[in-house]
Amino acid sequence: MELDTGATAWMLTSASLVLLMTPGVALFYGGMTRSKSVLNMMMMSFGAMAVIGVVYVLWGWSMSYGSSVAGIFGNPFQHFGLAGTIYGADGGYLMDAHGVPVVVGVAFQVTFAIITTALISGAVADRTRFTTWMVFVALWVTLSYFPMAHMVWGGGLLSGDGPFASIAAPIDFAGGTVVHINAGVAGLVLALIIGRRKGFGTVPMRPHSLPLTMLGAALLWFGWFGFNAGSAFTADGTAGLAWVNTTTATAAAVLGWLATEKVRDGHATSLGAASGAVAGLVAITPAAGSLSPVGSIALGAVAGVLCALAVGLKFRLGYDDSLDVVGVHLVGGLVGTVGIGFLATETGLLYGGGASQLVVQVIIAVAAMVFSGVVTAAIGFVLKAAMGWRVSEDVEVSGIDQAEHGESAYEALGVGRFSTDTGAGAPAPVRRSTTEAHA
Picture 1 (cartoon, one colour):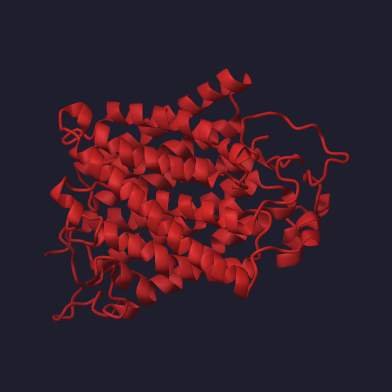
Picture 2 (picture 1 turned 90 degrees about the vertical axis):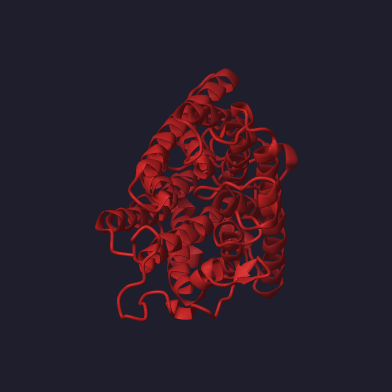
């Protein structure tokens, strides 16, 4: 296959856009935390970039796309250190079916592994030891993300080559199962293992900087064009369709979230707009290449409403998902993955395709939830026993940034200038939605 410079340029651009999403997550999450925790929150994203950037080259690509072991993961030694991946027998670069060097595919896929793992950090904000988090990143990406990527995209059990393809070919265009359901379940499991923050449900824990959060959401939206349109793996009509569907679904989700807030709370908030955008981006991720633009509007609107409602579940059920990873990524990922069964233009139930696609989409969603839940629980409990997850209560109250990193984000203003750590002297909470981050 000869080099296609246009397709190669697009994939390098897409890889760069997706990499930008992780600093976007750092800003999005950082703005929603209290000022005493913002650096720690951002460091969890940057730490994931550092760890996975090394691990992926060593065994991550091989575990994701190497020869299958029982349909669950690729052989980690086959392409260890990218052996046999960069150059062919003739000394030239290996090419994929689109005329893009395989090493460019490695660049694209490592950014997915990074952003997926970084997403989990929002569920455990304000109380997590940084060293334990860094070890978790290496273990989780190895034992949960790489196998899931192989099962869905590498020819494994949940792919078009797996056993469920006899019903209908599973569809996950850019990561509903691999990224969002995987990370959402992991966030829920860790939140349960680590436990609630001191004062959860009784002390105001308001975002310290909504402008940072909105900036982070804007960077995520921008980077997501690489995430979704880049998953066409070349610059073609499918990439264009994915771009349009990503935009329309996201816009519709913002409207759905804001309408829900207005009806329920009487206010359409900036945090609601930012969160609604992310919910729409999450939902359209698995479906971007298989829906029409009109179907994408419907999917985004449903995701905006359901995610806005779902973020309040933590108060009803008692788990402390600090920044709504479960409500946005797990629920949004489920909406998108299952929604394909209804709205896919070629195989969806509402387009006359019957129920086969819907059945398969439900199966792969449930399988992803079970796999991520079991693996994350095993890792989480082992690390709890071996290293401990939580900082001390004194550190949690006084400021995790100082204790873990020896720094504060707003030194001139005082470490806790914008923190609402205790009820004493704290400003009255402004009700913005049912989420704690918005309260």
